[in-house]
Amino acid sequence: MLQYEDAKLIVWSDFDGTITLQDSNDYLTDHLGFGSERRKELNQQVLYESVTFRDSFEEMLGSVKHPFEECKQALLENITLDPHFAAFYDWCTARQIPVVVVSSGMEPIIRSLLIRLLGERAHHTHIISNDVHVNADGSWHIIFHDESHFGHDKSLAIKPYKQLVADGKLKMVYCGDGVSDLSAAKETNLLFAKEGRDLVDYCKRQNVPYTEFDSFADIHAAVRQLYEGDATLEDIAANRQSV
Image 1: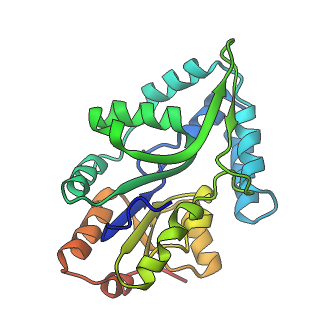
Image 2: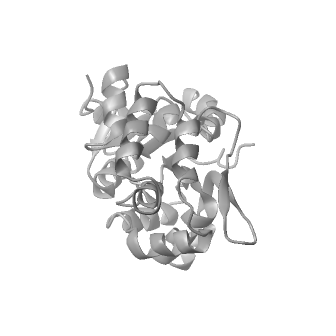
């Protein structure tokens, strides 16, 4: 079902490593699970399509045996926000530009982190993500959003709006950094891929046009130009990084 059919511009954004400076799921795996070496091996296998994201992610989180509330508290103490995201979020909100979080993480963790990092306004943020089931003893497991090999196919949230894009009624941008963003990478007018991360490698390998960003200050500048008419998608595309 369309929720933003009257919008002129939609910003879709990954959460971990994009809105935040650290990936919360990587943090859990590295510090409370089987460690960074195995996680990085799995990320490479997903990037080169020898294992699905869903299977690798389930293995990663399955290695974390600490109670859920303990995991969440560790993240609240250690995950930080991109220092330019709050200004960008408020700027978009003031102009009725939806900022939609599309994540392979778990909604209770994302919501808790956003509330700590953004305050009460984060209660109204639209989050599309996986969920979690917590047992009485604190043990937990991820509940995937859909049956795809991603676990959460982010492109499914974006595709209903593509006809509006084709009709010239809507512009969409996507912001991401990693292997969980592969399904969404080709779906919007403008793709922002974080400098030095796996999504850049994927775009290079697949010849997917992208604009590299270091922080949300870069994204804010480009989106402001689009909104105010100072630049077209073609102008920004001319400065894209690609193969």
